[in-house]
Amino acid sequence: MTGMSAPRTARARARAELTAEIKEMARRELAEQGSAGLSLRAVARELEMSSSAIYRYFASRDELLTALIIDAYDGLGDAAERAEVRVERDDFADRWFAIGRAVRRWARRNPHEYALIYGSPVPGYRAPQDTVGPASRVGVLMADLLRDAAAAGALGPVGSAGALAPKLAADIAALREWVFTGVPERYVLPAIMAWTHVFGLVNFELFGQYENVITARDQFFDHALAALAAALGLPVRPATV
Amino acid sequence: MTGMSAPRTARARARAELTAEIKEMARRELAEQGSAGLSLRAVARELEMSSSAIYRYFASRDELLTALIIDAYDGLGDAAERAEVRVERDDFADRWFAIGRAVRRWARRNPHEYALIYGSPVPGYRAPQDTVGPASRVGVLMADLLRDAAAAGALGPVGSAGALAPKLAADIAALREWVFTGVPERYVLPAIMAWTHVFGLVNFELFGQYENVITARDQFFDHALAALAAALGLPVRPATV
DNA sequence: TGTACATCAGTGAACGCGCGTTCACTGATGTAC
DNA sequence: TGTACATCAGTGAACGCGCGTTCACTGATGTAC
Image 1 (cartoon, protein in one colour):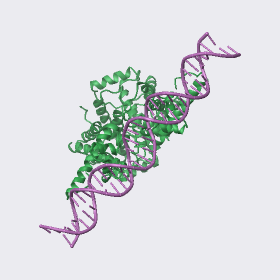
Image 2 (image 1 turned 45 degrees about the horizontal axis):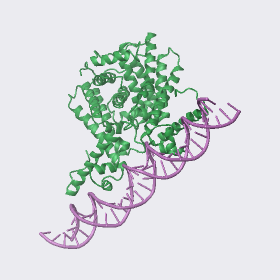
Image 3 (image 1 turned 120 degrees about the horizontal axis):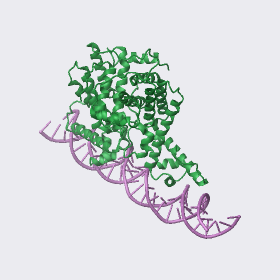
Image 4 (image 1 turned 120 degrees about the vertical axis):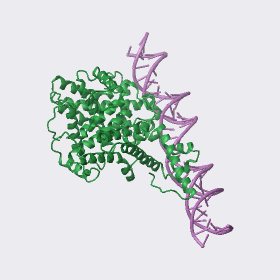
């Protein structure tokens, strides 16, 4: 996941370990202060090293933040993939449920990391290019699922909203050359919507919008997943929690 | 909106004006720094007054933040209401579109205020009770729309997801005694989902998740609104942008 | 209408704090011969 | 296997900055009689 091969020398091993420790401690700080309150000095203090020593591992606070963001995307991606891969390949609705639930579970367990990647952008921080791969993993997983379902002829009808605006049709065409290869055209927009909806649900739950509105959070989320599966054309069995 | 009656004395008038100026300047700072970077001293500096003077108007940074949050909810609520009220009362789909588009337009015009209320919670900040009224205005507007449509017999069928879990059914019952009065049971969950989805769409657009995914933002949003209207049981005419 | 007193707005200095980043330096680890 | 040199990790002091909040004070505005 780190992209490094096994370190040879003791020095390299120590370096890898300390890099990991710094990130781990930064994650803990993040959980207490939020991304804006993440401070190199606090991390160093907690690790009982001088603040300047951190600079041997991360060139700046932004670079540490970037590392945390990538790790967060990868953590979420791993969680979703691990959950999805355990499901029977041809139970497409179950695969959908597995992805959705894994996303929510990970987000509830790592709320500050989730906020880091799906909350308000960190002011003054501009995400570098290396985040886009990790950032797309959940979406890719959903697209893969649709491709498999389409190949198996398991996709049912989806509501049509009439003719599409040309610009939007072009977006869909582009998507079908990339993540949505092999997915019939009419399933692409429902997929983007369902993807958006899943994170919208998690956002609202984590950021407090369901306070005084929904108390049966698990059941509501599962209900929504079932409705989304139907909107995606996936064959849904009656949901049981 | 401020809840104050017309100020009598010159002093009271000056006070009201300066309070507004402080908030206005704070909003401008917010737009540049984000909520975590909002500083009383910076606001004071910009207003060419001493930092301690701010304390005559707001007891603390948190109190200023609360005022901004309430104003943001009210700004969004006003925008949505003003847009919705201009539509023919019995064109229910149009009313839905008006609300959704107004939310998005306001969010795009006031991205930092939007992030303040729908983004990651401000670390260490706990929203006081006075925010819940303003926070619910858009939801109330949607519920009102559904009530009107139901009364007019204009609501079509919605997808049923089978029997509901008891806890979830209880939530719905509670909602129907409060905001969703007069709205038939089966439309409540689709409404919560549609409400969630609208803000999920705006979140994803504003927070950068559609980068490299959707370029036709207006058309995509309208498409989603149309799909949501259908999911809500609202009578949809073919969408034109 | 004028006066005495109370209330309020605003100031400037200070407290105590934390931050990111740089730099010259020491001592340990790794590498080449 | 031993030695000379280069590389790296970590330190501590310093720079320059900004922050929220408090406090004793001055001068203006409002109020009651």
